[in-house]
Amino acid sequence: MTRRKKGDPAAERVAAAIMEEFSPKTAEEAQEALRSVFGPMIETMLKAELEAHLGYPDNDKGPKDGPNRRNGYTRKVVRTSAGEVPIDVPRDRDATFEPAVVPKGERDLTGIESRVMSMYARGMS
Image 1 (cartoon, rainbow, N blue to C red):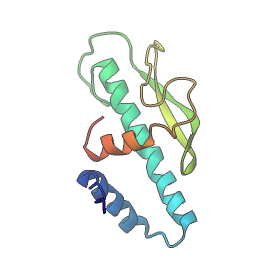
Image 2: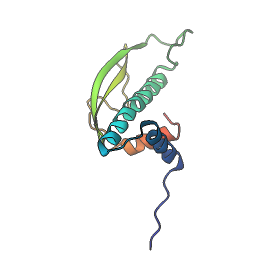
Image 3: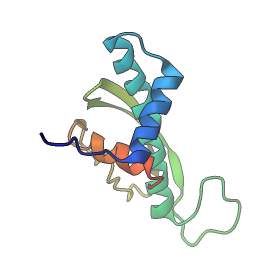
């Protein structure tokens, strides 16, 4: 008899927190809980990517190295295993920001969801 491989403890804590917070009773409610978590999680990762690209944190009042700045958001709907999720993708003035989490033109995220959840559970951006 083979033993079941133990999962990532951080990911399991995140999953337990989601289940506790949303308390889904049906499969549809569980899917809705996942959709409501995926959007903010992806947006947080995109904001961290833009921060790294620009070289300064959001709302930084100090002097900046270059002329490029944040320039609002673009609404995008991506497909996940839980269904379609609307996200706001941050922009920069020079249009040089190329996000890695959700590349330009990409709308299907079903292949990277497990990696995103694992990275988020570990506190990585």
